[in-house]
Image (tube, rainbow, N blue to C red; front, top):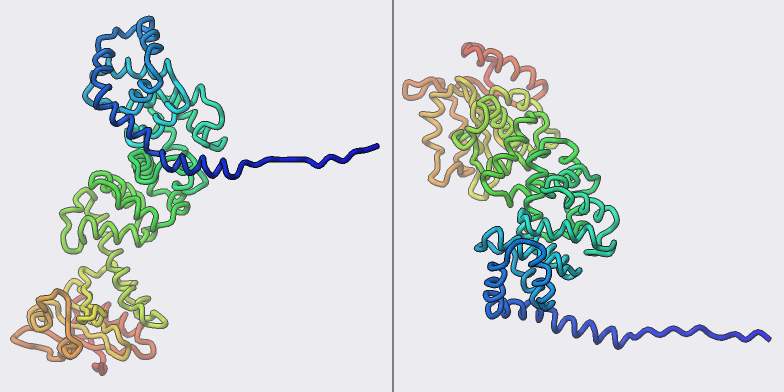
Amino acid sequence: MTTNIRSYTFSPIALRKKRQQLEMAYQNSDGALLKSLSISELPLLLEKIRALPTDYQTLEPFAQSLSSLEIRLLASMFPYADEQDTTIQNITNIIITRYTREIGRMSWRAFQQHCNHPSLIQLLKHAFEHETKSFLGLDSLARTQLQAAFQTKEPLVPLAYFLTHSNQKAQTTLRRWMIQDSSALQHRLIYQMLSQSIHQNTILDREDESTIVDYLETFSPTEYQECIEKYLVQRDITTFHRPLLQQAAEKLGDPRSDEKPWEFLLPDKVLEIKKYLNRIQMMDFFGEDHNSERFCYWENHVQDIKKLIVYENYHKKPLVLIMYFDQFVVVEFSNTGHAAHFYHKNGFEQIIVPKIRSSRGHKIKTTNLFLLKDKRPVAKRKQLYINSLAHMSSWQERCMEYMSHYQQENWTFTHTNENG
């Protein structure tokens, strides 16, 4: 006869729940104990280690004589900034002699904040050589990469290489390596990646622009300048990324106002950056035009614009765009239905600007817009008004003709003035 016996499995749900509760309750007890021992026990232990020679025959029996708690105490106190190199090396050799997986995890946590410490590198080299595949909960690729990195004297170099050439975003790779957010190790690897490759399309396409801006925001002034210089030198006005240029203008100052913070670049590159900033300011100003005709036209002249100013009302709504060329000024209004007005630069600066200038910067009341439509050819013995151009059919061709003559200072060339 065949007897069917039902299978039986037991899952200790209540016991597992109790274990989790106990782990939560006492998760910081070990750290508190080690901190207490670092005050009461560590000084005496370090005194003994300082007196030891560096040979293995002496260190090995000393290491074996220590309790597990003393070994953990030594491992928890890196980097021992006030100790001599020989003492630190003795501590390292003692810990390696009594290595456990817990020591490996403690070393990895310490390495997050002290990523250039040679003893921590030595400890982790030992850990990756002797640990099983489950160490740190790494996947197979992450383990292979970390193991390879810690076979070198400077593991950050291959890690930065892996990070740069990965098909995954940097943040994904760092998490696979179990690297903590906002740690010194994360910062250093991101910095090395960007300082080498921020100009490359592979990095710029893989990481979204806002992420790169966020990374750059955490850099020191020296680190930031090094990275942004590489980016700007290797690219040009046609391949700049708007968020990066806007951030640079905020952190270093607008070069159109003050070039001094930008002296690390050649003058031609600074001029290129100014033109790019003019272009995006112009794009924003004409953004309400449904067909962007005016932006498309004036964008062709961005190379010749010496200065560009946007006047806003007190609600920060742009009202007026003033484009300065060599010897003349063009005034455009944000709302359609207004003509563009051409003025002599010197007359405009001396007659009109003082009337519209505000103590609050580039602000102007809507009721004062008429001041920018002054059609007096001469005022206070200064040449002022040149011409106006309504944005009607084929206005681009007429404007091109005006610009060609005015750039040659041929002020006598004018069609019949247009309303606006």
